[in-house]
Amino acid sequence: MASRAELQALLISLLESSNVYFQPPESVKLRYPCIVYRINSVRSKHADNIPYMLKTQYELTIMTMDPDSSLPKTILELETARHERSFASDGLNHTIITLFY
Image 1: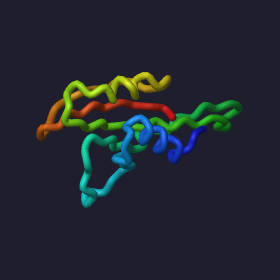
Image 2: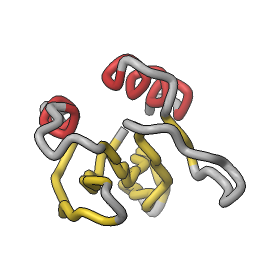
Image 3: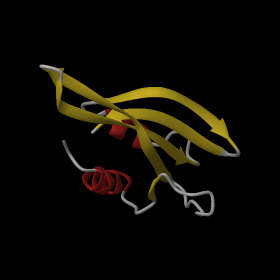
């Protein structure tokens, strides 16, 4: 299982910016475009009633001012990424993606 630090580094490289935030507190001022992500769930596979594989699912929220940003499509090219929904709010375009990593 890959670490969250590795996911952070991957997201920074895809965004080409350090505006990647893991579960930021309300006091953090976000800079756009950005990716905010959190742990959504952890799934396990069992054998003989013992978990042998854990997979963490993350929920990524991509926020951009550009409605035609290529960033969501770039992230959706990752093997376990799935588009959940998109919406606009307060002049920002949001794309929600779930990702096992």
